[in-house]
Length: 225
Image (cartoon, rainbow, N blue to C red; front, side):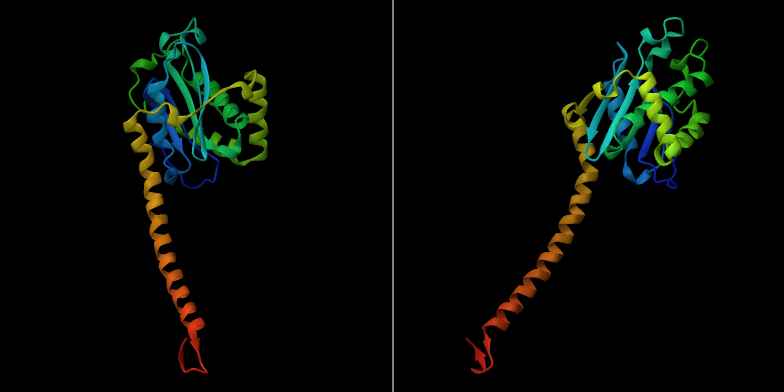
């Protein structure tokens, strides 16, 4: 798995997969845990027809373009099982992530000719040499003005209506076990917050107790009233 913590790109994680097999990936934020979402989303994609979809999960959006055999009528049938996926912060919107996906799809198919490549026989991370291009584009499209403008332009040119892309809350499509896995990180964070809250609460109770003591103490009576 390719990882980098050097960038503050709002594009957090990206991969290209043949069905459930990840061929290439990169993350700009290992601590975000965004890479774990791919293993949940990919098995849900059927590739029966071309699909562009956005899942929402907390403060992140999971965007993907899933190909189908109809996209590649004269190519190897396996090209219809490819998915291009990116996890991005929700405040980035959808045009930039989808513009990014359009560009990585174009570059990937230029490097791996769908007419002569059987993606179904490629092992996991079999296209690992493409990791560098994912990294470059995630930083460029996520952090530079020129890159974002290019992403928006590509989305406008090649996706008829990004606003019409289907959106689903990820919680609605998860099985029970998957929900538990996704909640683990959230629970850990809440546990830390709860501990901090208990510490603050104890401090507040102590301060309130002393405040009451001071209010009830009357110096003239040399005692408490």
